[in-house]
Amino acid sequence: MSGIKQITLTAGQELVVNQLTAYIRVFEADSAVRIVAGELDTEATVGIGFSLERPVKSVRLSSTATQTVKVFLGTIHVDDSGFQRLLEISGGVYQLGGSTLVNVAGSAGTSASVLVDPSLYTGFREFAIKNTGVNTIYVGPSGVTVANGFPVDPGQVYSAETSAKVYGIVAAGTEAFRVLVEHTS
Image (cartoon, rainbow, N blue to C red; front, side):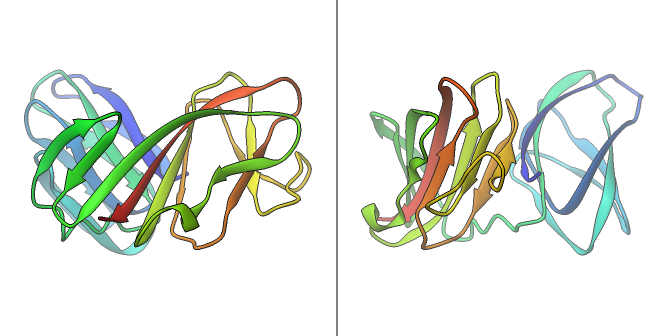
């Protein structure tokens, strides 16, 4: 599933991440990270992203230094061409060039409820939902159930570009989640 992965790399050792990947981006690293995925074989630093010609089933990562890195691996392309600067404003709103990021915390229950409503944001672009709970959250359109919803397991991220509301439901109790929405100002 597309998302940012926090990975600890040991100096001189290669780590294989088995995940369908068509886009790779280094978000945090103390030094260069070597990335091997299909025909791609390169070193990358923070902020560098790569689109692959064809999706691959696994990505090999290594470093000359022991470090913890955050890397986006996914099948969607992160288009940040309009991002020029990062300025933290307050209350979880960040200005990024021509875009604004808004983060929201919530909880999903046993009745389908709206997790993301694109109509609330001017120039809605995309969103990411992270399951910060301990049980699976199922996402989908209105009427989503645990039987037909797309599972977002604990710690996993689901992201998409859609103009439709995204609903969520859990099998029992409630589960915490976070949403990050990108829209134009």
